[in-house]
Image 1 (cartoon, one colour):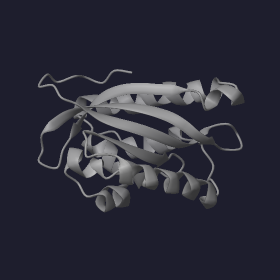
Image 2: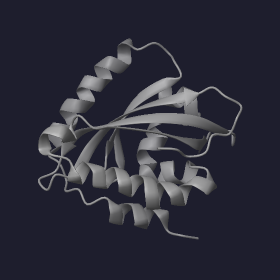
Image 3: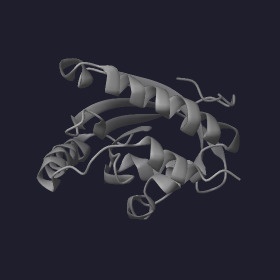
Length: 167
């Protein structure tokens, strides 16, 4: 079986960000999370260079069935392991590299205006696969212009039909 975590880490070339930059974004989204109603959508902040989630909205627990602290402790490895097996390789070897290349090739002005939207099948704690749609936005880039901090809005697509990965 392919080592998806290693492949993803090789893809992400971002340098570490100053923690104060990350904390600023996390604090803003913690405030937003307090006023959002319980819905089938949540925000998360992903730090690409180290594969962590500095922030997960409280609705993540409702959708996935996993506690936020557990997901944070696992990081991107959790996400990759919970992707539908038919979609892991596509995500790591096709979708993610194409999105990274798009960011790398965009002008500095355009990088923070980029929006990526894709859907995928994700395995909940109870073992059932659900369809999620994710919209991702670059919050911060590193010194080399690679995406370093990303805001994602993840929404449960309420359908019984299995929707394969699309971006």
